[in-house]
Length: 115
Image (cartoon, rainbow, N blue to C red; front, side, top):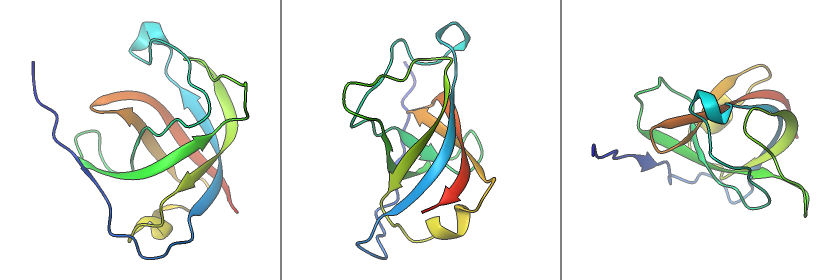
């Protein structure tokens, strides 16, 4: 088993979170994505760099109570990020990032609008 060391960017510049509306496209399970759906409170790793980058941002994908998002699905959802230094410059309309669970790519996000 290979270790996967990473760092969450905890250099918070403002207590006010950054909220974006984004197109979230999840990788299908049979193509290496998650093995099951997620619901409210899901906080995967958000990687704005290359696939081998290890500096992640913290963000929660907002899902309504009782709703589930399944592997292979594409949905427009809100993502609430901790306002870490350097993130606001990355979150511009049409910017795309990797959504990961550790080293595994489980989806991508594309900014539609900053709220």
